[in-house]
Amino acid sequence: MPSCALTIKVNNKLSLKKPTANHPLPIIVLYASDDGQILGNLGDAEYLARAEQLIKQSGFGASLGESVSDYALHAKELPAISVIGVGKANKIANNIAKIATATYAAIKSVPNAAILWGDVICQIHFTQFVTALIGAGYRFEHHKSKPKDADKLRQVNIVCTKDGEKDYQAALQFAQATASGIACAKDVANEAPNLLTPSELAKKAKQLAKDYEDTMRIHILGEKEMQKLGMGCFLAVSQGSDQEGKLAVIEYYGKSGKNAKKPKLHHPIALVGKGLTFDTGGISLKHAAGMEEMKFDMGGAASILGTMRAVAEAGLKIDIVAVLACAENMPSARAARPGDVVTAMNGTSVEILNTDAEGRLVLCDTLCYVQEHYDAKVIIDTATLTGACVIALGSVRSGLYSNDEDTLFALESASEYTNDLVWHMPLDDSYDEQINSKVADIQNIGGREAGSVTAACFLQRFIKEGQAWAHLDIAGTAWKSGSTNAATGRPVALLAQYIRQQTQG
Ligand code: BES
Ligand code: MN
Ligand code: ZN
Image 1 (cartoon, rainbow, N blue to C red):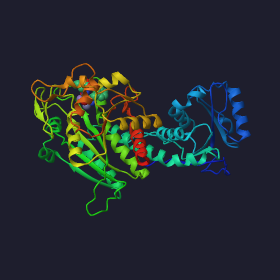
Image 2 (cartoon, rainbow, N blue to C red):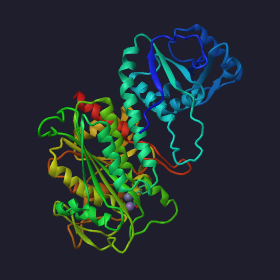
Image 3 (cartoon, rainbow, N blue to C red):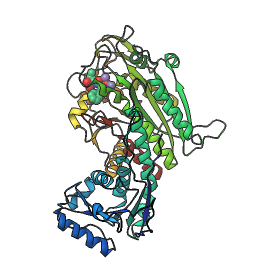
Image 4 (cartoon, rainbow, N blue to C red):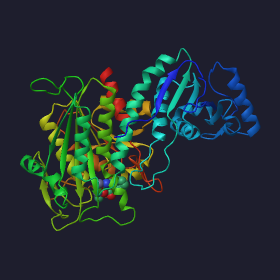
C-alpha cells in the first residue's frame, strides 16, 4: 500500500526559510468567508494585508471552494498567497472536506505550502481537514500506461495559534492514520474485479497482517472449511463462481498482545465486511447498464480492511476481530436457483427467492461464525447491501441499524465527529414479518417495501439474544456513481473514530 508522500506539520508560527531550488518559497494559504472577512487570528499583518488587497483587486467572492492566488505575479521573490473561499462563515463545520479539497487544488503544484488556519477551526474539524487534505491527493492510476505527472506537493505546514497547537498536534497523527486507512480502502475497492477475486481480497488482508505482524494474526478459511462448519448460505452464493469463496479473519491484539502462548482476544470489537468482488445478481441476473459498478460490492470488506489499517497505524489499544466475507456472485450451471432452500451455520433454513439478495446470505453465516468463535463486545457489519438504501438516503448518509442503544449513540457521535454521516433506521418486528417464508424458516427477500430495512431484519435473525450489533448499509456511500465512479473510503473515518472512542471509555 502506498504510504502518504505528504509530510504535514503543525506550527504556532510561520517561519520561512531562505528559498533553494528544491525548497522554493511556499504558497501561503488563507481563508475568507463570503462576507469578505479573512478568517482567523493569524498574528501576521503582512499576509493579511496582501490577502485583502488580492480579494479587492480580483473581485473574489469567497464562495465555498472558490480560490484566488497571486502565484503568477510573485512566485520568485515573495511567497505567493492563495485565498480559499469557505462560503458562509457559520457553515464551515459542514464544509470542511470541500474546503480541504479546494486547498489541495490550490497548492498541489508546488513542493511546499503553509496553511494559516489560526484559531478558526477546532480539533474535530482539524482532524476532518487533515484527513480530507490527504484524501484529495489520492489517485488510482496504476492501470494507466502513461500516468499523469504526480503532484509536486510534499510538505504542508499548518500554522495555528499557540493556544491551539496542542490540540492540533494531538489530532494530526490520528488524522494521518485515518487517511491511510481510507486510501487503503479505496485502493482495494477501486481494483478491477478480474484482478481482485475473493482469493486476492483475502490476500490483501494477509498483507495487512504482515505489515502489522507485531499486533495482528490472520486466518483464512476456504470453501472446504466452510462446508465443515455448515455455512450453507455463504456457499450457495459462492458455488456459482469459479472463484473460491474465502473468509479472512484478522485478529488485532492492540490490548492483549499477541505473544502469549495461546493468544486470545479479550472481548473484542468484531467487524464484518461484505466482500462481493463482483455481483452479477446470479441467476436473478442484473441489468447490463451500470453493472460494472458491482465491482464495488466489496466496499464493506474494503472499509473493514482500511479501518484495521488505520487502527493499527494509530496503535489503538483495543482488541478487534475483523472478518471479510469474500465471494463472487455469478450465474452458472452450478449457481443457486430462486426457490432453493439452504441452511445457515446456526441451523436456520433459508429460502432463496432472489439470488441477487446475496449479501445477506454471505453475511448471515459470517455473523454466525463470529459469534461461535469470539466473545465480541459488539459486532458491526458494513455492507453495500441494498439499492433500496440508495433510494432512501442517497450518497449522503449510510443507513445505521442496531439492536443496542449504546452502540447507536456511539456510532452516531463518531459519525458527527468525522462528518462520515449515518442515519438511524428502524428494525420493528412488523418489518421483520416480511421475511417469514412459507417453506423455510426465512426467505432472503422481503418484497418491494422497505428493502433496506428487511435486509437488516434478515441479518438480525442471526444475532443471538443479548449480543450487541450494528449494521451499516453503505450501498449509497461506499462509492461515487456516474462519471467519478470511484470508491470513497467510507465509512473508514467513522469506524476508526468509533474504535478510538471505545478505547477512551
Ligand atoms: N449489491 C447489491 C446492492 C446494491 C445495489 C448496492 C445498487 C449498490 C447499488 C445487492 O446485492 C443487491 O443486489 N440487492 C438487491 C436486493 C433485492 C434483490 C431484494 C437490490 O437492492 O436490488
Ligand atoms: Mn446482489
Ligand atoms: Zn451485492
